Length: 150
Image 1 (spheres, one colour):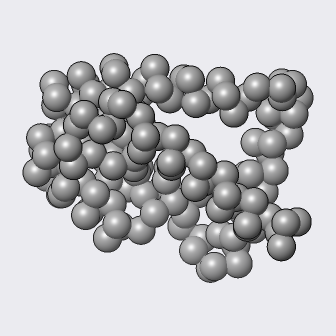
Image 2 (image 1 turned 90 degrees about the vertical axis):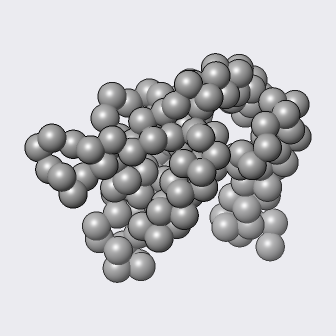
């Protein structure tokens, strides 16, 4: 089992989740999950974000994103703004509360990234990212979900 790729990914995922959830910043803020933090970070780094962008970026289903966004809206972290060009689209924007959270969590993310990169060369990091892309592509192709992009 130790050589199984899926098991190794699961172990890393658990370690990262545990590290983020034990962050003093997340403990201070009620009803915020690690995934909310990732979504806030993504929105903060992009000019215009729509639900489909989150579906593609995080490779999660529409129903999951809908539930996440509803919870974030209820917690005052996001608002949905109408788009002039298409009334069906709602642009997702961060509230001041979310921006404050983002500024505080950004440091925690940078620390975690630094720990992950410790002892790795730039070439190893590039190779690792290429391998992650290949693994995701393999899973997507096998699932038949050709609309999902890495």
